Image (cartoon, rainbow, N blue to C red; front, side, top):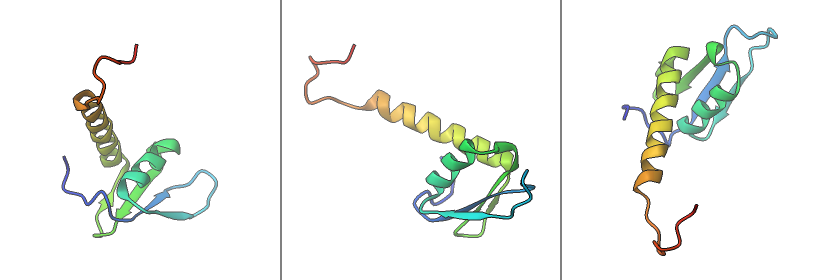
Length: 88
């Protein structure tokens, strides 16, 4: 996993923005900002972390892939209190 603090706030903006706006949104966590970047125009998404790291669109895509991989891994290693009652 990357060296970033996933629990720290992060600022997302799109540059250049299609509509000419320069709006920035601060998300409570880097994880949230990366997910939101995927919901928007990913080719123009940029993130500034609380530590001052600037993540370009290519880096954001790499981190999104890491997050997806991490989520799949957690689901695969999960356990059930009732193993006989597995979902179909």
